[in-house]
Length: 395
Length: 231
Image (tube, rainbow over all chains, first blue to last red; front, side, top):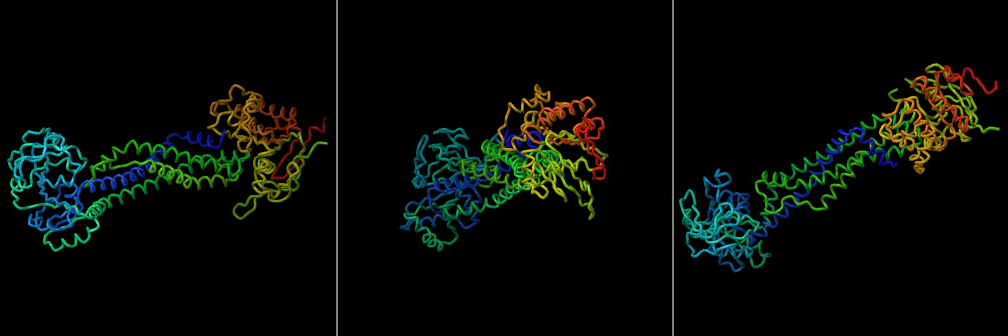
């Protein structure tokens, strides 16, 4: 028989209380791991999304930077337009490697979406330079538009899946009563492009009745070091704003910072409650066993022996809580991801909650350390009991 | 000549209660030799249990002197008292005070854990066999009768081979038959193994079977009987 088995058997005495305390610790650990995972996953996803944009800068009409950031990453947001004269001026700059004009428009389709409840379909007018900026965009079937003003569309992978379209099919753009022929379908890219239907830029300007208008200009520079001075040179252009990758990253991170701060506070509270719960459980257990502790002392237990028994109980609770917590967090990461994705205004593609082994280890060992702290007071209290007073307690 | 295992001189134990000293044991002087079988008797509140606790190193004394097995423990610190209890003293209590989550054999082995001694399965089983519980070693205390629990408690007290066994009202919670059995068991241990036994009891019939009886009243020894003198 060892100290740990005496401690373990005691925890089994009040099973419900022990299970509830272990559960409290497990929840705190699961929250902690999920938060770590979310933090890493979100940053990772965001970086990938931004890298996959293919350009360093996005020029948009002046407006809300959050909208612009959303537009850049998701293709949606409140759309503002600028004249394509801006594009014609900027394109002259020798520092530019590649540049692509875009016109985004969303159309409400009454019969679209799940159960035909209606949905917004996103259209983007582009030129060939768009896929030159995104060399990973490959055709799954079909190919590029037959002309600069053709009534044709190239569908993103998911858009085509959702509408169940094949090359050669015709799609009806509701609202503007226009029919387009599917000329190509892109392979899955894991970006927002998967959900977009692309049309030639001139066609988009015509069918959406926005002649000479653009929503954005994507720019890739020859030398990324020049991004600062290039941005500065564009300040002379009236009615536009320039968003760099770093800005987008910062803007999006700002957007989720408050959500993360809230989640962090909840995690801290959960951990605090768990620590109090553990201390309370063990302290109650110590009070209930005052006579037993007294008798153990009479049987030769030193203060250190008693301290070790009580401490071992706390550590056991935290070890089990930690183990269940990391299991819950790993098993439930998909569910957490679903909830977060549903809640956030913008969630990057890819895995949003990235559970790394080091997170599990950090959370587990922090919990054990937490257990050691939580158990100190009850263990000290028990170890300092005088044998006679403890044995006679409650007589 | 028998070795003196306990020597107390003017042993006094007082408690502080509302700025007043309450004397539970006062000026008790006695000598107990190896193999003694002593019953401490007296009315409730006479100081029997406090005297037993003091002699058993469960508490420190207020004044006077006390030596156990030749070691002066009058002013000993807790670690010395722990060491004395661990090595030389065994305890049996009125309420048995077994650990409810441990089986009979685990209860018996518990003092070995504190004494940093090997678990001695065979010895623990033998001891339980000797107290008549050889077939109930894996039972939890709640599955045992009062008499059986006290037998486990006696086996537990004996596992570290103590020199002196202290029993505080060991038959206080038992029926007549079980009381006779437990008392008989203690008497056998005293007689056959030369174990020094010091117990407190209210039961005059059982008390009179001890070799020596010490009567306490208001914390003082009021009379002593030594049946060995009549032999």
